[in-house]
Image (tube, rainbow, N blue to C red; front, side, top):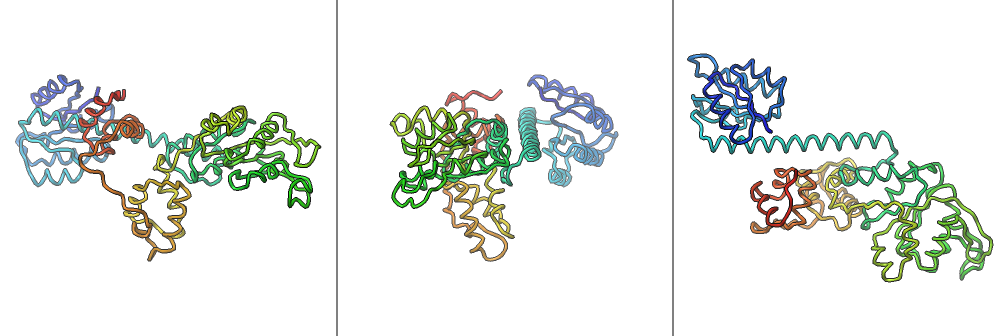
Length: 443
């Protein structure tokens, strides 16, 4: 139950407010003087303060209330304070509102207005505290990850990235295959590098093969090596990626492009550690940790018969899903700044970067910042320097759909006030949409 502290030397005022709040499930504490009020604030959890402006008999200057307000603001800068007095001084009210007072009401007050103000301020305060607590947890988790693991200089800030990194570091030392899924340009190779750097074979080689960058007839030779004359143009024997990665990690990017014949051989290597070079009957033995990645729907490929189901389950002992950049907006500005060289971002550029949908993900962001750094006139990059399409503002009658509301609530940690602000709705409007769409209220 939320708690309001009433600081007023008039017992009748304090009792009336106490009764009003108790009828609306709001607890109250009472103090008859500034000193007693400050003492209670030092001992008790309080969500909001309602304070009088005059405490000495025959005093109407409001100076005592101003002093009390400034002391509360000094000790508890985030605590909302409503000023209440029978002597309204407009200049004083304006100055205190500028200094951070939440509202300034005259006696006798309007119960309905007071209750609306108190309820809104309490909910906003709870939302802000929940947000601050979440940010503190995220900062703590980030510090712990950076202290305990080698993240290879990765720049990140978003909780979605943190979840992927946490799981990646957790499984890094386990000798099991890992499958990294996600759209192109999201940084799957960087995650594979982090797994290698924190694995038991961190001192071994880290070998990369992009299966999508080679003709299908050459992928097997790249993977397993080939003897001289094994295929047209093979004038001498060559070692494959498995041999090169012996004692370390082999990262197979775009694994969905591996032809079926190569898939069968890869499955055998994963099961036995043995393979033959093309054109050779001699088996070779290696110890390699395999990490693979794809942007393809391997489940659909299995159903279509273009990817082996047994290989999929062998590769997918641990799956890491790396979200697109648009789904981890907290990473956008830190990444953009990391791609700059001695330049800064104007607020208009920051807004444009946050508004863009980034279909090309981190790779697109890196190219945009490289271009802007070259074309910007001066050391500050503005929105026009980015060359991004102008975001179209939503129409006034556009309503967020069910998915948008669910995602906004997830990003806000279930705090309705924060989610409604993000969606451009009032709290009551969001509640109505949630009820209409069958979305349960957060508990």
